[in-house]
Image (cartoon, rainbow, N blue to C red; front, side, top):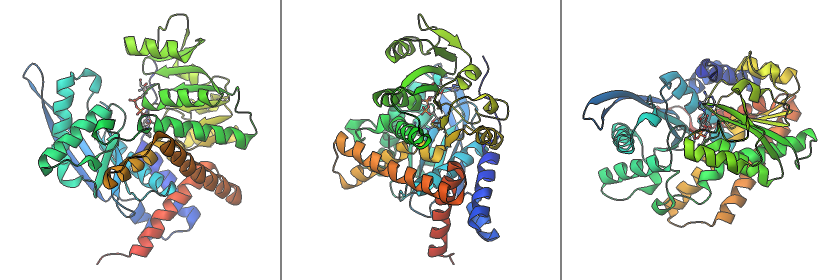
Length: 416
Ligand code: NAD
């Protein structure tokens, strides 16, 4: 099975930052500040396996920026994570929070483990030990983790509990993406996918393509891909292909069939009555919208030139390399960049944090309405900026996000 090709996401993120700094005409000192993560913690996470053996895993928490508020970002459990990738993802969170005007800096956490190979109890022990190792630097006013690849609301419940037991009282605001009964927010599970769908709709409209009946292919059918599929279909689009780590499928009658097969077998492949396709075949389908919603570096110099979609909406973080991006631009593909397209997750995480801190909870309709308002504002700002300066949506989104962080640096000054 061809995996998503791996390049270095930190190199990609730094080259995007460099472009933004040059576009904004920022001084070299500011480049140095913006390209340096504020705090990096590397931890050893020992795990007692169910068979009583002890295994050691590497964990990280990177607080890339705290200039505009507490740092915020997900925790990834994946065997291939490393420090460079965690720094890159924390950097992206920084520009994303600034772009959507949330009062947060950016962070990311990770443990280099295959969560699928952990029993439930092992997963709990690993999550609690990791939380306890990073405990001195997290907190509702310092740094607020959330779920990412390989973690979910159950991990957030254990993180919240571990932090609270140490504090001596319940601190729901220490993480977002929690179960509802622990102070989670309505609409958080679907938020990233809902935001991806809003971005897809606006990108189609910007290209003059009708939303009703627009065809969609989605790489990655996890928390982002699944909810994006549901949301785009509610808007009248039609999902014609999806994939997960095992491969892709097309030719299904309804998404429900694929989802129930995923639930019963752990993968979408081999759903009865569908055609199997490879990841690359999925990326090259003749669709209106392509949503990469798996891992980094999926659209590269090798894969991007064959993309036939009119619009690419980046559900995943850093799914496109600079070479891939150039190939898409050459072919006139409109790319809605990750920091805009998948910002719905952190927007509703922000709502969750606000609700936890004020101990007053909003209705699902209020959350959907506020998510739509914030996303539309960011999308229109990016669209206008890109038109005004004759640059891509990615360059515009980076310029706005990076520009806001640079402005915050200037106003705060340098201590001492
Ligand atoms: P997830 O673990 O729920 O799902 C990941 C999906 O990608 C799964 O279907 C998995 O099988 C598939 N996948 C993994 N490796 C693959 C490979 N090599 N080729 C093809 N498919 C592969 O993760 P998620 O939360 O849906 O996150 C997906 C992406 O979206 C990540 O880049 C993440 O950083 C980003 N993101 C997530 C959120 C969120 O709220 N969960 C928010 C913003 C961005």
